[in-house]
Image (tube, rainbow, N blue to C red):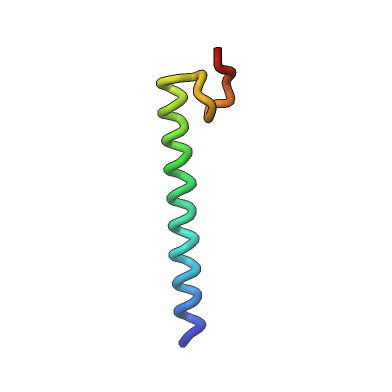
Length: 46
C-alpha cells in the first residue's frame, strides 16, 4: 500500500516538472518574438 502512494507521488512530481518545463519553453518563445536580442534567445545584445 505504501509503495502505491510513493508511485503516485512520483508520477505527480514528474507531471509537475514536465508542465513547468513546457511552460518555460512557451515563455521563451514569446519573449524572443517580442525581443530577439533578449539573453534567453541566445542573441547578442547591441
